[in-house]
Image 1 (spheres, rainbow, N blue to C red):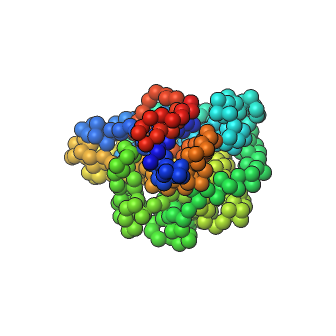
Image 2 (image 1 turned 180 degrees about the vertical axis):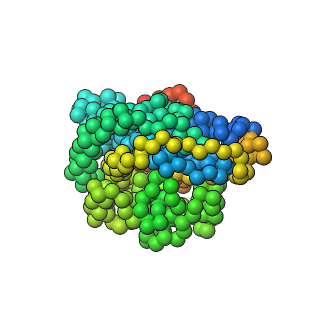
Image 3 (image 1 turned 90 degrees about the horizontal axis):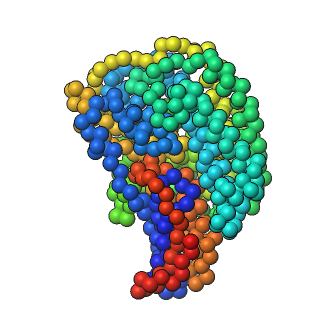
Length: 470
């Protein structure tokens, strides 16, 4: 038995590694995806006042702090048992859409585009954002501009781009200014033009990746995402709908009842826990969340341009889309939806209201917040004592929901591409690339810092290094 270790996976947020086990013929027999850091937020927040939880849990991640702020604040809203002002809800949705735009732009343009534009077998020293800038500066610039649009809207609303204190239990702490509204409306056409052009480009090259589409986690699973009462895509609120591999809705649970559908297992080889669909048990209850899962779970997006693209997406890829490669396509449709939703929210006169926060103390000793983060459904569950101190906390991050699916996808790609007798870097890049399809945030799930280089070592049965690629 030989083992190839990809340590560490590149172009993702956080650190993880992959072990690929080869039989005596050099063929893949098994794989393991390891997330190598320990999370601790559930424990070290015990004893803190509940109203501190949004600002504390926002520090889980520097990429998607808005997602944790909103989810935590919704859990705190439930503890206070308050109805939020209409304007506060719309402002929360607005900043949430901005978060989706900047995050999806980062994933597509900066993390995955080097593979899609330069090629999976391209020189690894240049298969990155710097190589993309050299080969296609317009594409690289488009990614920067879309991220800038989203980040500037977050800053305009919340006064800070990362870890703002604007989202609070009961709403937000300041209304939208007319200047930020006008500035954003002025910038929207440019952002929309980039999104339209990028989707058109992606559709024009999609047929170049037929082999990857067939091998990158192309498998029947369940899918999950938040929907409204009519089955429309929801990011901020709604029930978590589970569909089976044939597209049949098998469950729809609200935030308070998430545990009726979701069980949580620990993994022997990873610090990232593995949620599963409880009625099917572990590990059979595998489901996918995020852009692919949401578009499979929802009936429609609810905005005109995104719905037109969704119809074409389903015509091209199927009513239920199985391949994890199509996370990229789904992500671009959601990016367009986010821009349309921003325009709709800004056009609503009530968005300029000044009543943006409800004030209350502890009225319930338990609260659950559930939203869609860019990478999938995010859940914060808190229990407090009569004074509001946290007694217990449980967080289920989007990356965790996809843990079992990522493991299955890695194994499928490795079996398809990796040949231990004729190992090439491009084979291993494809194994890493299927992880990038999910756009996991391992820092979000396990809290790491620092950077580490990529080094792949092929070892013999005695553990000696036979070949190393850096």
